Length: 410
Image (cartoon, rainbow, N blue to C red; front, side, top):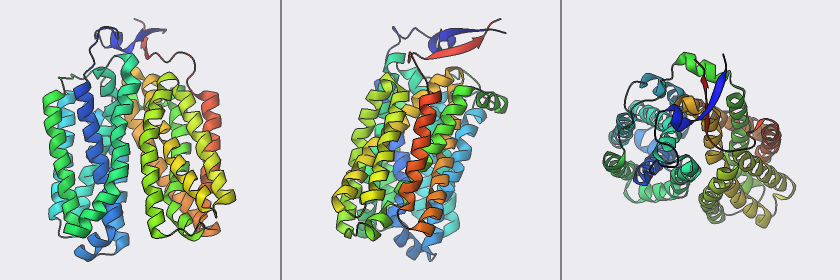
């Protein structure tokens, strides 16, 4: 059996990249979906105290609403493309948005932890499914050369949600109660649904992934390399950032107001980093990931050596947010270009790897923090980011960034 190289659009029997129109309104609807999902995902972090008091549970129990969403998202990401492989992708995306709306509605009326967990489990399904399909659909909605720009726009929804969700959620929770924040998240979901109904074209299924296909994807060297690097650099990021507040409080000794300002700076840095990351990844996703890893490793090293300095710590954390922006778009482009003929399945594996890395980083960073103090998180980040950069240099994509599909010859 031999293979021939062809463009993914030829493989799909679609118009050539040169003549295919760009469906930017549909891309904007996907951006709104990402914003609504990430906003809902982040809300509990700023509402835990109020949620726990109202539902008469401990703050630790309330925190499990975040864990539930992440775990279900990791399972749903590779599963949804398989379970819906025969359905029009437009209908699937709209159904996932309905799941987002239902999740927020159940949270608004939750009277106990069990009901709230049901809402968060439903959010995990929507989150995992949406993320697994966002990049493959972007690939079909714009010409190949505009794919990096489209992914950068979609991922802007993450950056805006990161900046807005926590402070606005905390303010709304303090002013009108924690349920009001989920009402607002539901309103974003309604806007997203209207936009998708108006802009998403019919998207009949192309490749039809199944469990066998997922196994075949894991047998591909470029896919495995991308997933291993994700596990390293994303776990390094979350090991460092999850425990950044204890560092600012116990090592840098910043006030609560200063900590809030630095975290806002981190979110703003991430917004612009996403735009810059999309620009660099559009030319070389390999360079984007290496550059982001090296910068964060350097910043984590600065925190280890001079974290006591308010100026050094503040600047390092803000720049950390900027550097992280290179990863989401870089990895999305890498995985789709590694398996364009099974983009949905590959993207599902990528999202599962992200969720696993988040948990790994939080656990690994926590172990180090418990044993050596608040600088344990940056130490984990230095090691993981350095390894990730080295592996990307060795096994990352090289040469032309054109999207190709490998198909068996008959």
